[in-house]
Length: 330
Image (cartoon, rainbow, N blue to C red):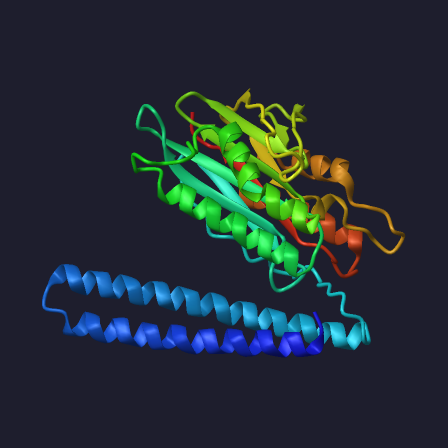
């Protein structure tokens, strides 16, 4: 991304912020004028959503400007961007469920991340809520990667939105079918641009006390039992875009009170320090084991702090995402 592209991006975000402010003001005025309680509540809700969008854009704009300024100070004319791990990590908002303690974070190396981490609340067959957890990582960088990332996010959004409809295309309760459907959707564009995607999708069924997952070449998650035992979840299939008719295998694992599962992209394990040594998986495992009886937030912060100790102030050059989940009710 050259300097002219960065200026255009900043200008576009600033314009979007102005539009969000305009929309917020419009909905607020309509709420005040509304003659019915339902209409008033709707407009207040819409105003609140616009306020959230505005705040998010302002934070991203400030962060992006900081990244550009820091890069200009330290990297001369290079266009490769990096970032320092901040002292205070801003955690992702997630879909809450009373039986799961969950903490999520995404750290994009550039304005638009190649990672996408998402949670879903899904109605199971016995009407009990299930927790869906999805993470994908587009290999490489550039405009093609950003475009592919957007296509995947839009497909997932539409798939989730049709879960209560009779014509739903993919059952989110079946990870293997979701990955197979997504693979067919992105296969052509992946081959046209020689871009591929790793992905992991899991369903946590509290009623059945199990976790069902399917993986498309993604970094295996880490499962630590309540007693500290490490379980290696290494079952995986081809990356998305590898072959058009790839089938994916569902794997079922018991997931009980006190168990911890940690999902992450390889942006964490491949982070290097001054000696060009990668952080690697064993460091993530040891960090989790040292605090696996603590809360999800404390586990996540322990991993991040160990990562900071490893890089010793060196800038991070790749996106990374991290999700920590812990069963807190039996």
